[in-house]
Image (cartoon, one colour):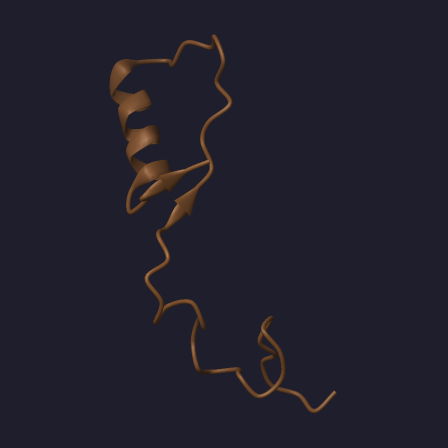
Length: 60
């Protein structure tokens, strides 16, 4: 290895950022798997969901 950071998109691209950032690809977030579980409180449930889905455009 030559050292330094290695981009998951191949050699020679480290430090250039995400190659998808220049495309109009929606942010995809995974959903929850809470099923029938009840949250400890409505406030904590709201904060959890807000944190999970902030900036999401698509939920899978």
